[in-house]
Image 1: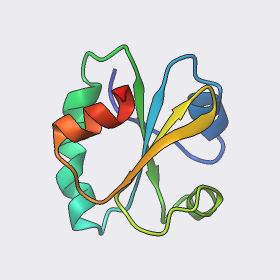
Image 2 (image 1 turned 60 degrees about the vertical axis):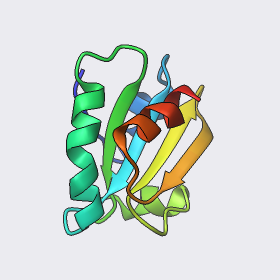
Image 3 (image 1 turned 90 degrees about the horizontal axis):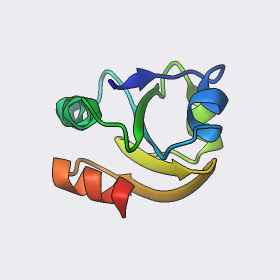
Length: 103
């Protein structure tokens, strides 16, 4: 599985109604730490079936960013059963990203 780009139109189906946990990456193209985190998220998504990773561009999807109180990026939000269960703000290493979802 690869990282899935989501919009407000696909967020509910891809994230809130997902049968597996979802790691939502709220980011922006101009954000350096977001760009640094992207390859790590791509690696974690590759061949992973335990959870799904989605990407939300906060510039294009400012309503979603506002709905989920995203004020700093990169912001990783873990959803299980449609509910937020964990969150991390700022650049973190790949093992910390995995622990965030699995933890």
